[in-house]
Image (cartoon, rainbow, N blue to C red):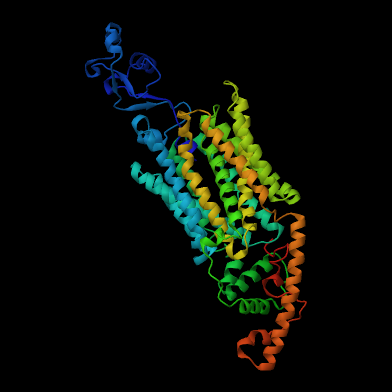
Length: 537
């Protein structure tokens, strides 16, 4: 969105009110003899000059006065491509130009906080209410942004909407993958990011038509508000309901889903849930952030930090720099969104065939090499630069869709939220760095692309030390292990139930009242959630 609302434009010192009749080209030729400094004009008694006398004055001015310059009292902007942007609205040029990076950082800092905090909030209050609550905050804040006239207030609201927007993205991912299981979890997890790519295309069209940042702000906010209307119909995560012991709500949800999909639930599914809830009723060991850095998981966690950081650095680094690549920014954005959408859809097929890890590796290597190669493109080869940028956008867009699912597979259930949260925190750090990354162009014009390329390649190489837990061989080994563990668990449970009945132990009433055969799967797996299918599809 910031490419349209905060796009850089050519600007010059504004003409005094009594000299606005002077042709723009003449004004710039007379007052700004060089293009190196757009923030000052040649010194002259402008308050005493008229449209007729200004040309005569500068023609008779001595060479000594040519070097004397004064700061601009205001600025005018080129509106041939863009309409009113926040740069023009708040005068974020020259001595205030550094504020533009801070404005962008406000949104990204909020997004960084949202990526970490939303997981805990959704664990406490549920996926559904957290998702819709932040969607409402996002919509209300978006409308408020369209009315602000203060830069300070604008920056504050950008932090809020950044937090809310990232929370919506993170919690929606958690919700959709917890509604399904098996291979569908991979498919849905990747498709969850597809609307982002499609939004780039729509945003380019909106920006082209609106040509005003306030109009665009309202236009991109309305769809988010419409999402809130589905609050009543949005299902809660069945896994979260089971974890919280809210079995009545879970049963209602399962029955509604089965009815919608015209499927028949097992006759004893309520008993299975009760048994599962009773057997898991013992308090779980508290899991802290430090657990993901213990010996068993520290290698996985460090790799995930590097990979998430590299992907987000290059993803938003390219996205926020589209307006500076050359060519038509609207066309560039449409092409970028289109190739990213195609890449996301294609990646699903490839992931199911080759696995998650090999896809991430290939995409990150290609993206990193393309960034580095862009530094060697001769000046004037605009379409080659745009082509390489689209390759980067395509590859890193697929990575951005795959990495949440890949990370979720690397941790056990009790640590999955924390593992993904640590990855999101690394992404948040990258988000904060991105606006300042391009300031390194003033040090060396090749430095930003080189840094992004190197981090992408390092992230790809680090994946080599992790297991691909979606590969066919790994799944076969895991299924064999789970089958063995389940058989032992079922036998143990059956013996425990007989012992409970003989001893009349009231603490085992649930197990003795609802006995089941050893070969019959117990718990939530009995209704399809642990299989490669889901009643929600």
